[in-house]
Amino acid sequence: MRKTLILTLIVSLSFTALVNAQELKVNGTVKDSNGNSVSLAFVQDKKNNTATRTDSTGKFSLVTSPNAKLYVSSTGYKLKVVDVKGKEDIAVILTADKSDNS
Image (cartoon, rainbow, N blue to C red):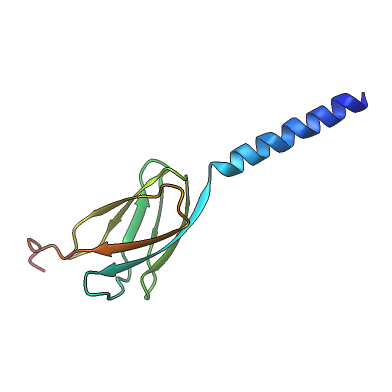
């Protein structure tokens, strides 16, 4: 009985660790090519259906998977796709969209 209880506990803890390994909290900044912060940029993980916006200093935080692709966009800039690749800190540089007439 005791062995069964210990085995169940070990399996439960292993499963919990596996589930937690599937999520990653990513912190990042979004700037333009001149180094200026881009506020209210949209940061989206389409696969996991999560999204956020940058704050007034261009910072964001998002819980996603370690192998996610983040789609970063803002008015007047080209869309940028960033591979997370397990990184917890990401710096994104957006380039101006010359075709945008705004």
